[in-house]
Figure 1 (tube, rainbow, N blue to C red):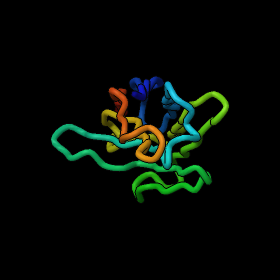
Figure 2: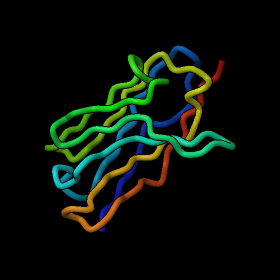
Figure 3: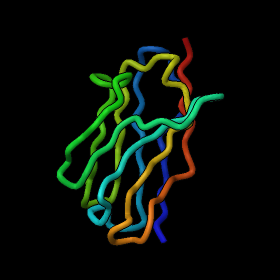
Figure 4: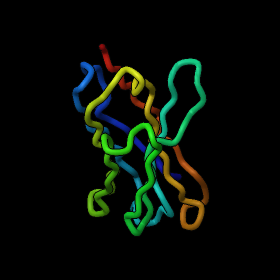
Amino acid sequence: QVQLLESGGGTVQAGGSLRLSCSASRNIFGFNSMGWFRQAPGKQRESVALINNSRRTNYTDAVKGRFTISRDNAENILYLQMNSLNAEDTAVYYCFADGRTLYGGEFWGQGTQVTVSS
């Protein structure tokens, strides 16, 4: 089994920054890909940013140029640097890991709340 533990959420004013961290209980190089999803009240969960083992990244259009996903393979941590935050970024952010090849499944963290006040 794999545990993913997010941290770094909180409340920030519009225009501010936050950095989310996702600490994995297993070697993250064993994941095919990792990413961040978010779910705002009354909306479906959506992909925010993804990164694979080649460090190739993919972002949803709404966050391009503002958010940066990165990974520290030595520390088994996934990051999401969020800059120029706005009210539309308010959501619960979830860490995701595709471990189907080595770890037998896909895994989610418990979520961390990000609230952007205007």
